[in-house]
Image (cartoon, rainbow, N blue to C red; front, side):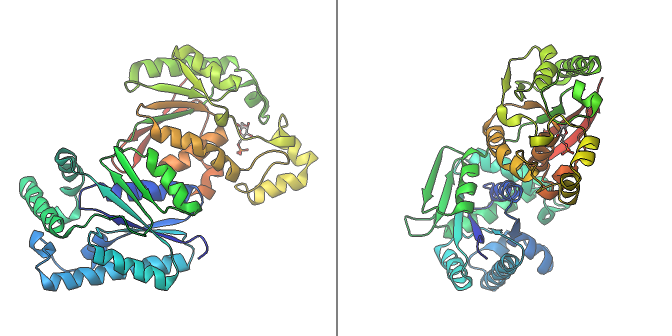
Length: 400
Ligand code: F6P
């Protein structure tokens, strides 16, 4: 359990803990730290019979308190089980609102030898809390079939029960991050270690609002016609046709405030030209570097360097072209792009390349990272990933 970490969420209901847990889990998994969420609410729904109204959550309900503690410990045990196996990070998604409960988590983590990072989400803005209730809670299984007003009243009463016993994390020795009012203030205490530091960097830019992201490869290039790798070729006439079709589509359908990013290679810059937008060129978005295979065709590589060809076929994710890159390294290169994308408040169109877009797509859609070298990102197709609360949804538009 060398790299193991338990991230314990802290905070009242409807503060966005689950949203943050899911986003963080997707990011850390993409960075190569297998992460799973252990949500105590799901344990309750699965293991406790019937429907629990607000009274069940009252701190005065002794019987339910025992059950709640048992459920919480069961989820925690499963988290340790996961960390003993293939898991690297377990996100313990519970309220953990009392000091006593957090001490228990610390004690169990101490026994298991797993470091813990508390991640508290504080939000005192009633309007945001109300939005969260409306957006996530009323459709949730707890309120299936219930009239919306009654459900909202019940949920607010549930929050009241937790508020009575809530103790925010004080200035103590534990390792914690406190996110206050959606980016207004962040308090960080004793955050050490590779995974925690990575998580912190991500949390600092994470926004509650997910913006649409559109992805497209450049139009067909001279190298695409010849099936050659890499290089810095120009677009073909067909490729220029795609650039015009893309511009028409963007003009008619682009979300407001769209910004356009390209790589520094000619084929993406030329694809952006007919758009008439100011574009930002990122070197980091340049295509995977094929090292000594740049400018060769796959057939040539197979004939001239059969061992290299076979090695890439065996493990395309880890294979590094001699003096070039692997997909695994491409994820590292793309990390800053992802953080920049999260930091942005505007929707973004990225005109990129096959391998680079596979890696970005894997992050955005939560695809298993080792599967990314095999994702299908065809030429002359625009992928519109539109924002939902928890996920991005995808539609593909063939153009040109
Ligand atoms: O063929 C176009 C291209 O963008 C090359 O420049 C690049 O090496 C390749 O695709 C990446 O795809 P794959 O990893 O499947 O070879």
